[in-house]
Length: 302
Length: 302
Image 1 (cartoon, rainbow over the protein chains, first blue to last red):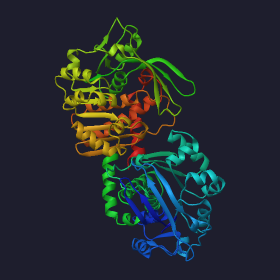
Image 2 (tube, rainbow over the protein chains, first blue to last red):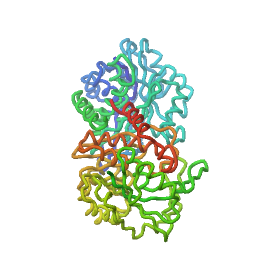
Image 3 (cartoon, chains in turn purple, blue):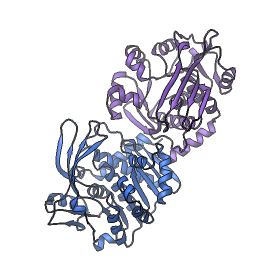
Image 4 (cartoon, rainbow over the protein chains, first blue to last red):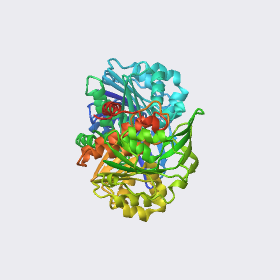
């Protein structure tokens, strides 16, 4: 089983050409859990929602093999909402508004089942929450941690103490570059690696693909070529979730398994970009993923 | 044999940390011909130099299997010089000065040998010169054309008439994006393809790798991960030259051959980035290239 920590949100998204999507299912935990469930079931999602969270979305998650018993349902506060607006090229976005109140003081107590998971994905969230979850992991064989520049900048010590127990650290390229004021990503990887002391590092690069490092070896994969990108929200979380799910199904973490995991993560994330909202992404099947995996092989392997 | 058209230049390059390299061997034709000669010999270089061009550089080219009988040596004018200055991250450069006088009115008359070549690489130069060379091709089986935004913007009709006889069109991503004011490169490829009517299109993306299209199929390869980039001057020309050289050694142009060619081009260009000047790049051997080709396979193929 994979236990996934992350946000469960309602997203309002403004897209180019005046399109607006209101209160779609979103959140780093949601996307990651749905992606992981394509490869490994059940997935246990750890998060929190408010009294106004649509029951239909929780049903949808369960239908896709995502256990929701570790999604705390609070009666006294509204759900986490994010309202974002994309620029014309979909490459940049602004946050219009965010209501993070429900996340303040969130300190999950894991169910027996979630705590006994073999694989933990600590999705993008505050390091102190990631820490609380990791401390409850009893037999974790593999821990993945996704983070953002704001956590690295402002909670570096907390993150450092976590890194010691993390196998795979994930970060996106813009954050990684900002962090070290260095344009060459290979150098950035060298620096982060040294700093973090993790076994593997994955730099998510969106439409530029992925650069990764495991046990002294580099890996680099292009993105899946997409003509029509609808909404990239959640693509990074989907990538991370698919990687965790794929690796959960493999006992060993060696170069070949890792690369295959990165390839599966790449194609899974490509589906996420083609529609808006995790509720729509949920209709992707393992067969869809397998078909595109073979296509990516034809695109990228020589 | 491969016939390569392009500039033969003396480059002065300002690099980060105050490093300056003066009058190194440069030019689109020089880099491309040296790269092609790693895969197929002889290569015939078509270009022009002035009275002050160092004889040692012509000797170096010949030593590497590049015939120089189609390099016109003019006694009345100075060689083409380019003086460029890179920004700290090596990702952007400015032209400090350029002396293009020798290229004005350049209208090569090919030797028997060059005209009988099976593969033509019309390297980055004015479309009218590319046209003059192509008109002299007698038994061309494969024609590659590299171009820049300035030619597409200002000489579109001339280019269009050339495209009909071109098999593979090469362009870099920034130019392609500017051209169509479109950020999604797959869409750019679709538009350029439609516009150009060529069989294959290669979008060179520098450190982001390459996106290519042949007979209805996409291909995408990452760059070779490099920690130390010294000077990217000529990397695009090297890429193009290596692709032409590799394809010259293969009778058929199908997807698998094309992808391998792109991979060889990728690793050959990576060597170019590690030193300054085509004279230094000339020391790379086929064995070096083969070794890195296998490494790229481990990096990128799953």
